[in-house]
Image (cartoon, rainbow, N blue to C red; front, side, top):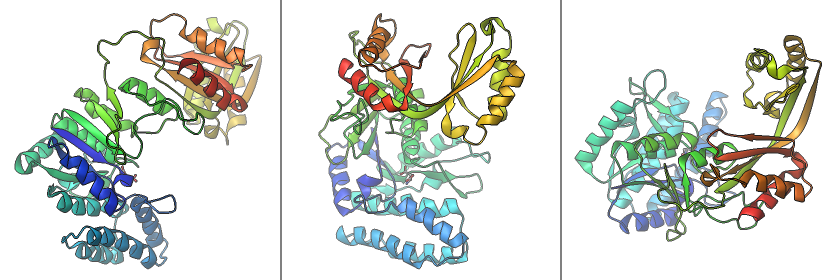
Amino acid sequence: MIVTKFGGSSVASSEQFKKVKHIIESNPDRQIVISSAVGKKNSEDNKVTDLLYLLFAHIQYSVSFEHLYKVLVEKFVNIKEELGLTYDIEAELEKLYKELKKGISQDYLVSRGEYLTSLLMAEYLGFAFVDAKDVIRFSYNGKLDMEESERAIRQKYAQYGKMVIPGFYGALPDGSVRVMSRGGSDITGSIVAKALDAEVYENWTDVSGILMADPRIIDNPKWIEVITYSELRELSYMGANVLHEDAIFPVKEANIPIMIKNTNAPDDPGTKIVDIVENEPKSQKITGISGKRDFTVFTMYRHNSSNEIGILRKALEVFEKYNVSVEHVPSGIDNFSIVVATSSIERCMYDIASELKQVCQTDSIKITGNISLIAVVGRNMASQCGMSGRVFKTLGDHDINIRMIAQGSDEINIIVGVENEDFKKAIQVIYNEFS
Ligand code: ASP
C-alpha cells in the first residue's frame, strides 16, 4: 500500500484535481491521500492557507474580512462546479462564516484550508473522508502522540480502506484543532505512512525531484536519483527546500522510502529518499551542493588558547545568553572562531564582542561579516581520499579564497566558508567539477 501526499499546487484547481485522480487511478496501491490546502494556480494567485492567516489578522484588528471570505468561497465553489461535485461545500463555508463572526481560534481557521480541500478531493476520488482531528493526536504539550495517532489511523484504515485525510493539523486531547508548522502536510503524510507501514510514501509536488543545486545558480542542474535521509537533512539545512524537515523522522524510523514526484509530470522518475543505499559502487560523485549567505565569524585570539580548558565553554555561554545559535567552531592553536548567522546577532553584535573579550580574556577579537557557507554533500565522500582536496583545489584554481573549512564527523559533508561575493561562483565551479 502506498501513502500519497499532494501539495498545494497539486490541488490548486479543477485541472490539478484531475491530474491527482489520474495518478491515484493509475496504481491501485495508492490508497491513502493526504491533501494540502488549495494552493497557487499561478504566481499572481494566493494560497488558501495564506488567505486564512490574513483573514485571522483582519478579525484580530476588527477590519472587515468579507472580500477575503469571498475569494475563499470562489476558490472552493469553482472547483466543485467545474468537477460536477455534489458535496454541500457552500454549507461548510456558511458555517465557517458564522464561526468567523462569533470568534474563532487561529489554528482552527487556518486548518479549514486542508479540511475543505480534502472534502472535495474525497468525493472526487470516491474515497472516504477522514478528519485529521480524529487521527492525528497531540498531547497537551503540543507534541505528537504517535501511539494514539497510529492506533486511530489503523482503525480508520481497517474501517474504510481508501481515504483522504487533510494534512497540516490534528487535535489536542480536548478535541480542539492544532496546526503544525507551515508545510506540515508533509509530516502528516509521514505519520500516516509509518502507522500503516506503507511500502512507500509518495510526496507529490510541482518539481520532478530534488536537484543537485539551486537552479537559480546553476542552469539546468541534474536531478538526484537517490539520496539518503541524512544527506537530505544536510542539504535542506543549508538551503535546499523540498520537504518539511520533520517529515523525515516517522518514515525513517520505519525504514519507509520517500519518493518525491511531480504531479505535472508523473512519468518523470523523481527522487527516492532512503536510509541506506544498498550495493552502491563507490564513486567520486557528490550528491548535491547547497549554501547560505550572510554568516558572521567571531575570531578570538589568545596565546595557547587550544590548551586552555574551559575557554570554548565560556565563549559559547555568551552566545547562549544572547540566544544565538552557533553553526561552527573552527579552531587553531592561538585562536578559535565561532560562526553564527548574521541575522541572529544584528542587534547584539557589540554586546557579544565585549563580553567575549571579558570572559575569554582575549588578546584581540576580529569580527568578519559577509561570509557564505557552502555544503558539499555526498554519502560516497566518507572514507574516500581526495574528495575534499578536489573541492579546495577547484576553489583555489578559480581564485576563490576559502575563509573556513568544516567537516561533519560522519564525513557526508564538507563545509567551506567563502566571501558572500564568491558565493555563486563557488557553487558553480564545484558543481562543474563534480557533475
Ligand atoms: N497548507 C499549509 C501551508 O501552506 C500546510 C501544507 O501545505 O503543508 O503551510
